[in-house]
Picture 1: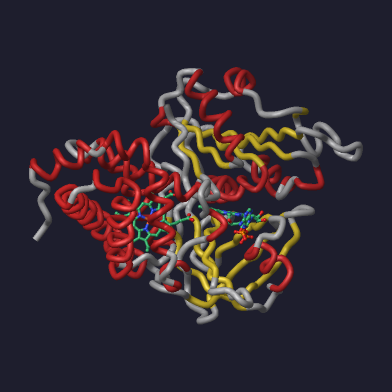
Picture 2: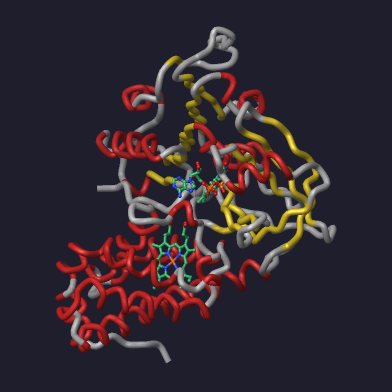
Length: 402
Ligand SMILES: Cc1cc2nc3c(=O)[nH]c(=O)nc-3n(C[C@H](O)[C@H](O)[C@H](O)COP(=O)(O)OP(=O)(O)OC[C@H]3O[C@@H](n4cnc5c(N)ncnc54)[C@H](O)[C@@H]3O)c2cc1C
Ligand code: HEM
């Protein structure tokens, strides 16, 4: 039976909004401290995203606050529910994990609010938590079922063999992955990511999302990985994984996907390794044929760290409706304008305004947080509606729209 939130429960939850707004981050930090006492649950989380100022702390605080603020109109949370569910499924979060968060959250509210968190308020939050948890678990169950039912699909971890490993730049390397069982793979939606489970000595296996950088082909996935300084999994992939190695993957997930039903022009905007979902979108646009102009705009520091430049140019030249523009912020003496890059400097909103169909295009963005902040803010300031701006974070999502 679906749970129902009574008016009384809702009014108690609403009454805690100011306290949550004030203490939301403290509550979620206290919640994680409790949650991570359980090693099995702790292993589900990327610990680099945690800590007092960890971005996951803020993402969950934001979600809880948004939930309490919208308790009378949960429809506004539909997009957030989809994003969270896709992320949870990618990381193999299951119904059996939810009671751990419930117990940790209610105890954390008590820790931080003290006597203000009466038994009645805690009971109301317990009901409200399970109401939201049911929505998430329901959507997650559907996604798990769809993943398994898709042609070439699966659930859980599946072994893949590294068919090729290719250096794309000084910092970025691609891996083409084919199922060890010889079967097909599900056709991902361009923009989606897989999750890789990496055995790291002395630690529990680490889960990391990687956007698929190839178009859907039913046989393999390509991921394209930047070496992060002291990054556990990226270093493992760069240093220890070779052609012929085996890695474990969870199926494609994610809601940052190229909308295929629109005739609007498409602008793909990326910075650094944020190009990976864009290259997948570009490959699929070339493969399937597109019915609208597509502009790929990419920023890199210089030629040494510019990945897949020749591949993208070749794709763009293969189709009259596709154009590419590359910006180098600090070109090297060996970088030739017109050959390796087109523009010197950062991607600039005024340049976008003059060189893209800004009043009608759908914009897809991925890159470092500062890049996304500048681009999303700039596009909104130019009047681009938020439903035409789609972005992906390579970490816990931060809400960028005003
Ligand atoms: C949807 C999605 C798609 C992604 N797609 C891609 C992709 O296509 N290509 C790609 O390269 N990456 C991608 N990522 C990022 C990827 O998932 C990993 O986060 C990335 O590879 C780094 O992981 P790591 O294990 O190497 O680094 P981690 O060990 O997780 O460390 C990350 C960084 O934090 C620092 N760090 C770690 N612990 C601490 C600490 N306690 N205090 C301070 N600093 C610390 C490390 O030095 C490092 O620089 C994606 C992420 C998401 C969410
Ligand atoms: C009602 C309950 C829950 C809510 C509201 C919630 C909310 C969120 C939000 C907002 C994010 C960030 C999504 C993004 O970056 O796009 C997230 C990610 C995540 N959640 Fe949950 N969650 C809930 C339950 C759980 C449970 C039960 C678990 C497992 C014990 C869990 C594990 C995770 C993990 C591992 C991530 C990814 C963290 C990262 O990127 O480092 N969540 N969740």
